[in-house]
Image 1 (tube, rainbow, N blue to C red):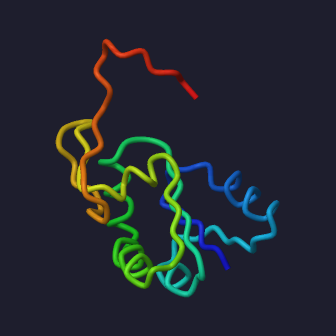
Image 2: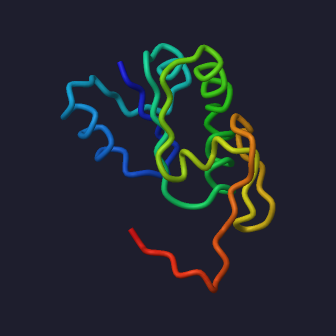
Length: 117
């Protein structure tokens, strides 16, 4: 089973449909025990790191994410979900991430043309 982590900041049903389209059995969940019992984990996300980290903390999801990665389960971070895996972000100040990947997420400077996707 694939656990898609619901912390209130992502297009979860689209991710679930994509997983099911390729034959995966996926559930959308905010329960730590579902994440720990899953064979694979997806952390999607849209938004900024500070409120996302607050949500993960308030829902008690950080330990289950850390344990899943420590157990070497296949783990996919999408968009903000990938950014959350790093040590920090400078978007909205210096925000601490999960620290599972070394490095900092940095916002592009205003003079760089960035495509909107």
